[in-house]
Length: 178
Image (cartoon, rainbow, N blue to C red):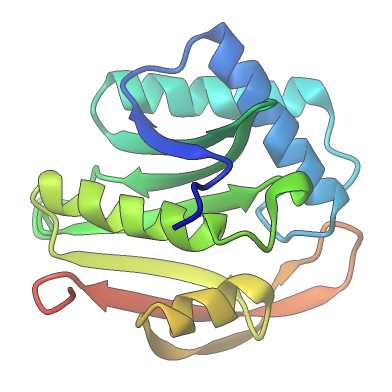
C-alpha cells in the first residue's frame, strides 16, 4: 500500500501560523473558482479575519477544524460546526471543505470527510448536514461517500467570479454509517 503524501489531524487551536496557512488555502480555492462564501478577489485581510473568527469558535468548543498537511504545509481543511440550537444537540454542520489545487485528485477530500465524520462521532453527533454547488466536484464526492441528497435550491449563491449557482443539500446519518 502506498503512503499518502499528507496527514490529517484535528487542530485543538488555531495559532497565527495556522490562520495564515488556512488563509492561503481559502484564497487558492476562491481563485480556483470554488463557491465557498467568498467573492474574487479575496484579500488576505478578509481571509485571515475569517480564520480568526473560526479560531475563536474552536477555542470556545463550538467548531472543530480538521486539516491535511503535506510537505509544503496545510493543503486541505474541513470544519464541523458543533454549536447547534438546544433542540439539535445530536447534529453538526459540515462546512468549508477546502483542498488546495496542488493536492487535488489524490483522495484528500474523501480523507477529510471521513475524518470529519469520525470527529463528529467523537463529539457525540449522529447527524451531519452540508450543502454544495449542484453537480460540482464536491457534490459528486459526497454522493460517492454515501451522503444522501435532499434537494436543490436554484440561484442559491454566487460563484466567486459572478453568476448564480444552485446548491444541493446533503445529510449523513452517522448512526447507520460505517
